[in-house]
Length: 463
Length: 100
Picture 1 (tube, chains in turn yellow, purple):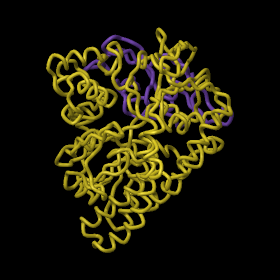
Picture 2 (picture 1 turned 180 degrees about the horizontal axis):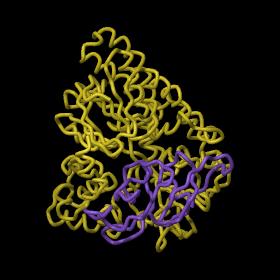
Picture 3 (picture 1 turned 60 degrees about the vertical axis):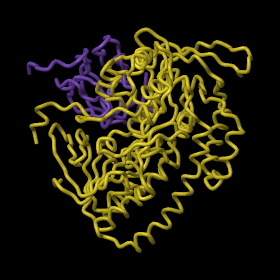
Picture 4 (picture 1 turned 120 degrees about the vertical axis):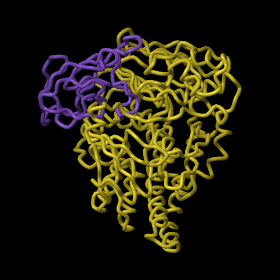
């Protein structure tokens, strides 16, 4: 590892792997930094050393990561694994924490590919032991070949919830129930997006095949769900909710025993490093999330910073990979490794393919909007898991005159814990906007400050 | 709470959690090991003392902070298990100065 590279890529998911491999091929001196011990990010996690039979259970889309990881490992790019980025500022100095020692790296260009995180789903009891994200369930399957040993219930909305249900069915996990919190958006809202989604017909077929498999397996699926709660004393004991078809129909109360509850309501960009680098944000009303302002090449509002994949706005693994390649072409052009014409020639095919993979997004975003109940939770529901601040306290701070999340943080400590707002940021902004009547753009988001990871003085001094 | 898909052919190593010895598969994270061993809490929160287990498993939520080999505030989901590792529940916030 050197202390300076022409190009530094952060994140070894599809976007980062493609960016680093492409950049190395174009002759750039490039290093890729990643927190995991093996390349793949969360979506292709552990794909390089996955064993049978788990690899089969995970499905074909997961195994697509294998050639990409190979391409990266053979590209000649420097790979810095098991390295946490604990520092990044607007001068683009990157601080890494590797095995108890801190290192600083500079680069002429930075490609941020830090991926997505699951959208927080605050509901009563979501902090209880036994409640996890659906992604966590998937990571346990991919990285440790582990599955829930007793009754597991899945709750929420979106493609990943269907995927993990399908994967669990392949392994033979008994799923107690699927609690579908998708608000009924109505077919009329979806129709305008359907023609545009048709080029990505394979995505639709895949989704349908998951739904059919779930139906065939006889797993109870509850729809039109409200009042979802995780209950238990020291750990999760049961999940309760009401279900009905709305429109004045009678609601049924249900209380079911569960040892594990996996929650999911879509993914949102992991904004921390782009924000730390000073990249400009914008609100995406359709995706109901923040994203990073960028052009088709991934150029952010900061000259030396490009962004690729889900960290800049949710696009999915395949589109993220293609965006990574475009970023690498642009960085290579900016650093005079490739002229304008060959850059554009190489980009033509990538852009066409990217268009196809992006065409499904508006349809998916309209099909699976996050439910209001878990964006604007009841007063008693914990919003900040670290500092244990509930929605009522945030509403009160907004009523007292706090106009944005940074003021709410000063008043309530919300977002001041070790996760630095990753698990409450989107909820806090939404609550303030709702309470004050301001727009999300007016309310804004938490300011991000290093250190991003707990680091001791000893580790800081140990270079 | 969680089990292995296939419990036969797995290489294991020995470590201790709260003073008790366990055999766990090589290559998994500390957080995965905690879940596999059926531990019911890995920390008590600094604010209310309520129990927590891993939530996101990907380094985002910091709900899996444990004391590992004497060092507090370690993200259990980001650390791989090692032979003879000593893993302890973290009680509230870490002490600033420690006797080692």
